[in-house]
Each structure stands twice: as C-alpha cells, then as structure tokens.
Length: 374
Image 1: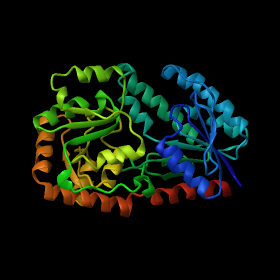
Image 2: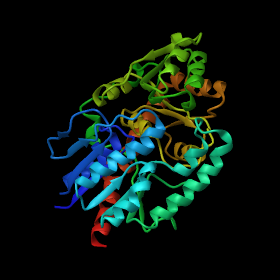
Image 3: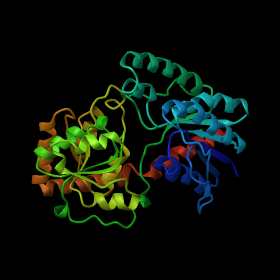
C-alpha cells in the first residue's frame, strides 16, 4: 500500500477539498493517507483509517505561518516517511525540492493562480505587488518543473497556466461529493426568502455592496461563515442599514445546506481586486453548493461566469461594482419565482452532469497512477 502524506501549513484540518475530497478518494482507492496540519488539536484517526496529525504549532500572522509554520509541517511530514508528498500551500514550494532530495515523489496542489492572487492582496504594499508576483511566478515554474506533478483548479484566461511550467498537470475542480448533500430536501421555491452568501465574510468579497443591494431590493441578506478580519463584523454591524443582515455564524455541513434550502438566491458577487478573479475559469465552492440546493445564483459578470450562465441558464450575472444592477437582478428573480425555480433546477442538473466529485476524482487518480509508474 502506497503511503501518501498531505501537507498544509495554512488550511484547517477539515478542509473540504483537502480532507473530505482528495484524502477520502485516495483512501477509498487503497492508499495509506496521512494529513499533517498546523493547529492545537489532538491527533486523530478517522473511521476510514485516515490519520490527521498536528505539529501543535499555532501561528501568529502570515509571516510566522510562512516561516516557522512551514518548518514544523516539513519536519513532521518527513517523519512519516511517505512515498508521495502532496503540498497544498504556495509557501510549501520552499520545501518541495528538499523532499525531492530525500527521494520522495512530490505533488503541488495549486488551489489558486497564486502569482495573480498576489496582485490583489491588499495587505501587500501596492508598489510591491507586481514585482512579488513576477518573482513568485519564476520560482513556481522553477520548482514545478522539477517535481513530479501539479494539480490545478481550472484554466486561466483560456490558457493552461501550468503548461510549460510543470512536468505534468491535471485539473481537479472544487466539485462537491454527492453525499455531501445528505438527505436534505429542497423546499418549494415559493417558500424561500432573501439572498445568501457563505464563506469568507470579508470586505474584498463585496459584502458592503451586497448589503446595499439587498436593502435596495427590500430583502434580507443571510450571511454564514467567519469574518475576516474579525473587526469587519463590527464595521458591518455599525452600518446604518445593517438591519437587513441575518448572521448565522459558522455552520457545519448539515446546517449550511439546511440554510441554503431556506434562501431564494445564492450570491457570489466578487469585485475585481486586481488578482485572478476575472480570468479564472472555475466556480467558487459556494456556487456548486448553491446549485446542489436548486438555488438560482447571481454572479459577477466576468467572462467565464457570464458564458456559463448564458449557456446553462442557472442564474444571472451583474456588475459587482454597481449596486443598482445587483439590486435589479435580485428583484427580478424575487418577482419571477417560476423562472427562478427553473434556473435552480437547471443548476442542479448541470451540477449532477458535469460538476460532481466523480469527475474530478478521475483526474486526481490518473495523476497519482502516472507518478507511481514514473
């Protein structure tokens, strides 16, 4: 049985993509799987045999995570003496070649187009962003051409980002497993109320714009997730139209799907922050979740999103910087429940036919097989 260790310095241990999808799939197909994380929780072994072990290190800020956090993950990961190491954070590229020197097979799982993401990071001084992006892209290509494989989430601006920048790569989308939905039944669309947004509750994700649009559309904005930073919650609560917000907190999987079943529209209106958001050809995980509960969606009118919505008719697109445009799309869906209900059904159909984890899993296993045979 091949031993695989997944390493993450930044993600939490129950990450949907890392643990519940990729680790579970590998375990189901006969791999001995261990996940190494940075947190203060106890080590555990899941019922299916996946081991989660922690460095016991809790980082204080990005700099400490990217230095000491990486060192702790590397040391503990190496102790496991695995055949294949699967890296989930950009900062872990700094240990990729060290693992190769130890005779290990190494995979980099690029959850985002990190070089482009750097351009939109507000915490990086604006004058440094493009230079750092350039340096990172050179470093990423140097490392990825020397390790065994790369996993990516989708094309970027119509191109294969890792073509010529890696030995081999596959696309593994953030598609949900069908069993994630549980036994929750979608209620009648006519019983649903308000718009919802789940995930990272941050200003750069367009939350203030959504607040104003919900107020103009005379409906409620249901939020679920964690505020980032925590101080943003105070800023939101001090807003003079905060009364339209219903904050549900951070919910487990069962409760989040139950919440979706009560809401009329799923929102994902990300503004252009100067990073990858406009050109990346995939959906945020929350969009697939909305689809699973037959919710029509309203997305930013970026090219890929607009093309998919126009083709499959599972929602509407709006200008993420235009409150009036977003509010008008919300009002249209709320005032046309029959059409909105049909869009929700179209989304569920599209999910079941093209965007289930079964599709992504085949690519994951294909890459592992090639690496084992090399």
